[in-house]
Length: 414
Image 1 (cartoon, rainbow, N blue to C red):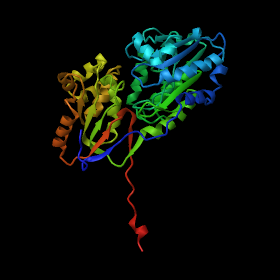
Image 2 (spheres, rainbow, N blue to C red):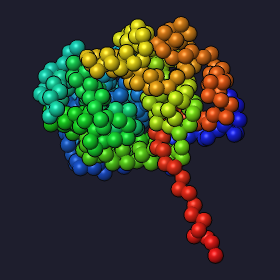
Image 3 (spheres, rainbow, N blue to C red):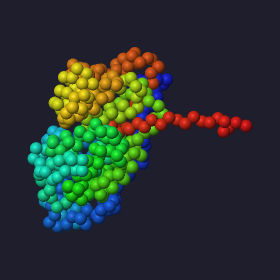
Image 4 (cartoon, helix red, strand yellow):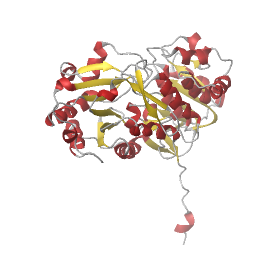
């Protein structure tokens, strides 16, 4: 794809931050110096049953890197591998194949530690958060003596950031609990890059009063999936420290919004389906002028993924109808449709994907076979001089509009 220089406002990527030359050493350092908790080898001991919550295949968490040092730390405390379970936090996502589990944790761990998927339909009630969410967690969770949550930290469109106690809620909760929590996405403050005053994140963090999570081990990665920093320790305190590192990478200053934004989630698995690609669209929204056009480039090899999500978009007469529908009754899957629709009612969104043209258009996108074709049409609609911003790592790039301060020439006058 070629863009004329006079049209190009910029190619915006995550900030270049120095990565650890030895990722294993970085993980070990975090485990040796946890924030707000004793070391895991001091928490867990002989005879303790330990559950490690790991992200599912739709997430870019480096579980295969995090788990070996983590399990070595448990072994140093006297924990037997036979007493360790890895539980994949599915939320409402599909189950894994055996091969996918093996790929997520690595052959060395998979061959020695029992791995299993969380079951959203097999949960137990552990109480209510302060906002009233009834928390139902996978029935095995309360039976473990020690609970460790792993994950990665990056901006999240409604929880502020991924990571932390998101491994529990929504990770290993029932559909009912996830719906109650996610309906807070419509409240002010539930947005990317925000933790204080974010009602949805506060609801997630309240789980710490109901489920005893002994430690989180979260990675902050750059767009190449190299570990920049690892934080371990208290589920809230360590998470906030990780969010600070995340900001150094993902919050990117943009001098002005553009008329056209071209974005991509950043490749597989982030564009595994349309449902997951929404994050790139939401971030693009932060950098576009009213009435501007967004070109979303996502393979979507698994299609839309969620039948409710697809039905809400494809059967609505307009994006506005979807937004109005979620305000009347919150439904999981429908919430993601509403997130797309809230952008599409303000902006034309082209979708370049492997999905059928007929379905894409029915879902209120404008299907395009190539980025070049979508861009040609966008320039035709908005004018040949329209300013273009490119976000190739859209899931990992949170644009922050910060106009350049004009230079005061009077200070240099004589």
